[in-house]
Image (cartoon, rainbow, N blue to C red; front, side, top):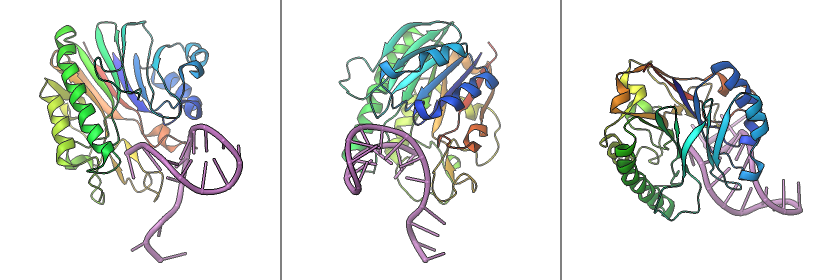
Length: 253
DNA sequence: ATGGCCACCGAGGGTGGA
């Protein structure tokens, strides 16, 4: 089973890239973030024509998440239960026998800002919900744009901003791992300076000035089956790309 | 030369992203 995550930064603009990528990579499930698209504008016909089903949780202009899959999505959950939030950042569904969650973690804008406080509160609510979710679904993949670079290896050395690497953000990431989840990318040997996001400015992609902030966390019963995990930089090289590249995990079981 | 983008809404620049 092949599961991927991709922050497309506007589903409308990126739809041609998405359709091409689905045809090439043929993932069993793909978690999307930053749709920036209302549910009524979701391009379902194009995605179905590509051989995929879709469940989505969209909003106008900002945020928005979806799960595309070859098999039908079951027990669909939108948003974090009990956490009052206008922003559409979560959708969960069971694909086959795996619980798949597409998460778009709050960016946080600047350390110490109101949005930063919201980021930490949101992550706390996510963690509390997941604890319960894992008891019901032992085989679980939490996929998405975390807006956290977990380790110094995940950050280009010239990155000067505190956001995305601050100690409280990394502690929040660790709290997710402490639930019994593993960063699939780090289960295997990986090339140095592997990133999943590059700023549109400063020729950042060409210089590989990036961050690894898109992750696939897998629950304990899935760990032994992880055969491969990688970032696909191909779509980042196209005209009018998303600033994020897809990350893919292959599960052998 | 120390900043350079992109997408949104809406009709011009402000906002947000990371």
